[in-house]
Length: 421
Image (cartoon, rainbow, N blue to C red; front, side):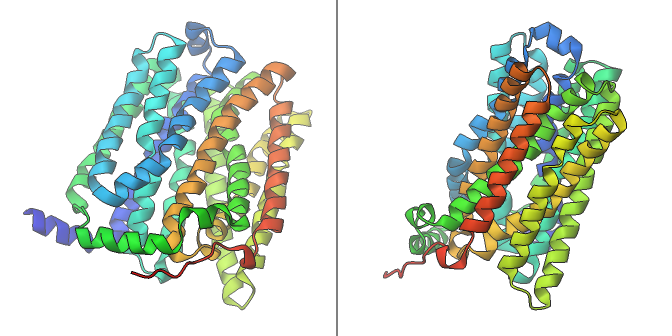
């Protein structure tokens, strides 16, 4: 098949490529969260002599480089297209994930995690650019909802697979297998996605659009900061679950590593189902004439309050009650997932600024991951239990709900400037 034929075929199958993007997002989370299962393995902890604080910093490493490179990766994707930047970065993070097995010290582990985070920074800028370019307005909500499943299914699958591989083989084999097997994804990606290197005219048009809503207009908008705070607070909880849930289940609730992986799997699958259902339900209510802003705020606040029930698990006396709230709290937080995404990135944001706004919010996501992993590790060290980490989750979710109520107002949306060529 010629290159022209491949390009034509890929252009006619955006939904197939969307599924491929979703799988790529899933794989990135598998490689991102596999370390969480390793940090619940006593052999891994003993080999590196890890304290709770060490585990916190190690779990946060990936998020710091991920956050720093969000805007630069967006710049690269805008100028060099989606296909090749994504392919190169995908290969790099898979190799880095497999190379974790070669680490022999805490500093080397930290460096490898930084490399994975730096490479994975391409995923969201590339994916959202593809969705924006290939789907019309009537389908962008559905496309975005499908894509977001990768961020929930990935931790679920990653925790279960990583735990099984560690128990069956070893933590070193787990990193090699999860890292290198992901490379299979590159085959359909290279065959199906056309080279979308932009022309000079396309670059010029993009620059003109960007001038109408410059970065300063976003940074002075309370709406953007409301979205930033809510996204940070919601994601703090999600990454607490992705980073510390396996260790909590093993160390404080007495589950085996295999059972902790399965319960983490159930928790993230549940939040994925709730997230999609809540997004659909909000859309139906809005379609009946209700104010989109009010409806989405209500779902966001309900999700934040639901997530705060994680603290009930901390104080539960029985293992059954603790495990119930462990699953229920993350599942209830799913009420906020799709609606916070729509509220922060679409409902109140001018179309010409969605890309830049997404970059800012992705920085919030990355910072939340880093702060959650490291702060919860320190709180665990101080309190000698997971009660303080869970209390921090409740505090952040409360702050996020208040920010959504107070700051997300139409009159405070980013302003659009008139551009004169």
